[in-house]
Structures are given as C-alpha cells and as structure tokens.
Image (tube, rainbow, N blue to C red; front, side, top):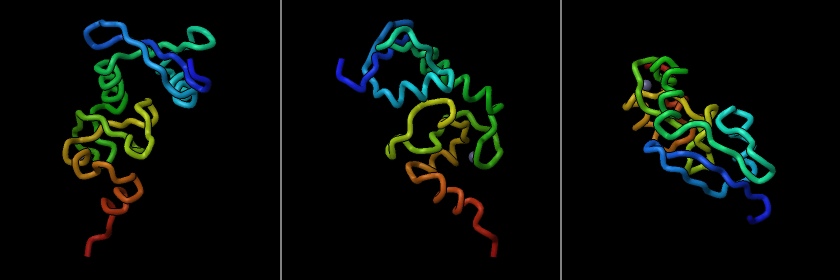
Length: 120
Ligand SMILES: [Zn+2]
C-alpha cells in the first residue's frame, strides 16, 4: 500500500465485491459523512452500492431538484468531479435533468449566478 492511501472495499450493484485504493483525504470524508466505516488502520468499507447511494440521495432530498425545486431523479455533484469533487453525501444533491445538463461541469457559483440573474 502506498503511503497516504487507504484501501476501500465495497460491493457492486450486482453484489460483487471490489476494492480499490483511495486517497486518505477521501477516505476521511466518506467516514465523516457516514458513507463508509473503518475496518482497520488501512481499510474502510463503503456502505452503499452505487444504486443504493443514488437512492439515498434522492430520498434525502425528496426527489426535489436542489437548484429549481422541481422534480428531480438524477444526482449532481456540487463541486464537479472534474474539479476534484467527490461522490460523497455532502457533495451530491438531487437535480432535475435540465439543471443537471445545464450545470454540466461549471462550478456552482457560476451556475447559481446564471440561475438567479435578475429579469429585465
Ligand atoms: Zn432543476
């Protein structure tokens, strides 16, 4: 194991076990946000499969788009993955298709200022 890295174990949606090395910082976030538990000094276990994670976020947000308040059934990263955002509970929100598409990889601040631009 490389230093600064932690082994993360989990299960796929089909029940297959997997493991991968992740950065300590991400491991810490996942544990803090109750998305993973500590197994031992070098290993954490992710508590959700991808499908379960999506379901968890949508239920938590009541299938309501974080941006426009409409019905949403997709997941969006507040800080885009392209900019170093991770798939953790705090960084993920429910979004509708339209907002998800229009936000793409712009960051939240750009996006929000375009949404709330005053009418002329
Ligand atoms: Zn929306």
